[in-house]
Amino acid sequence: MTSSPELRPASKKRPRHVAIIMDGNGRWAHKRFLPRIAGHRAGVDAFQKIVKQAIKRDVEVLTLFAFSSENWRRPPYEVSYLLDIFLNMLENEIQKLHEQGIQLRIIGDRSLFNERLQAQIVKAQDFTAKNTGLKLVIAASYGGQWDLTQAMKKIGQDLEAGHLTNEQITASLITSKLSLGDLPPPDLFIRTGGEQRISNFLLWDLAYTELYFTEVLWPDFNEVELDHALDFFAGRERRFGRTSEQLEESSYA
Image (tube, rainbow, N blue to C red; front, top):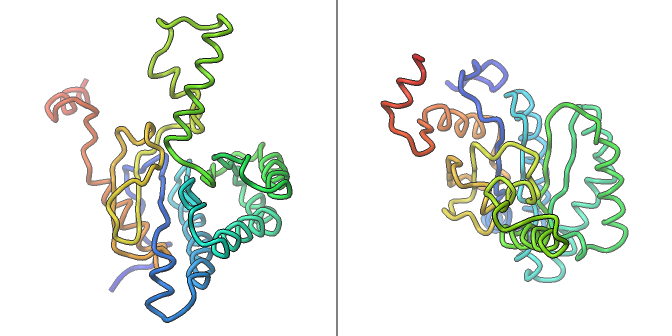
């Protein structure tokens, strides 16, 4: 018998930052002979559950891949519906997020959004900017290659202006120019839906992230499934290039 998520004892080892590709909405709908948009509606319910569970499990940052730079290639009606869901969340759910102490951030190429959506993004971020609870990052019109490109452009501008030399370009500098540059890197990456790839998501940031893939489709990914992923993380030995013996020695130092 599975205990409820609320009664589950907290693990000693928790990821500070969890990043998730929410995959499988369309297949979830197809299995039920429903239109794809029904899967996206069900995906919103899963989103709300996982945000609440992340708060209960003391996750500091939750980054969700909502709409990729490649998703613009999908049928226009589906793209329009996805953007409508996003706008609805920003307009109608932001008060609930604020009451939970959540700080909302949106990362991605906003220039491709219409003016109403761009304005609502700014409004929602400003409204929650001073909150000190969960940092909820929504990646929308986002791609890891885009993120690295815009970071390189910023560095190039600093070079041209004489504010930077080649010798000053370091991994830390590149990180600081990325969308998540002021946040801890993801400790745990989760992809639902059975696919086992990172699909142009946080390419630089995932360098030492633990990768967890599950067959569970996103609308079925609930609190218990998130706890399974957290248990997986708790069992991982994170060496960052060192040996197990070195980790043991440092723990006794």
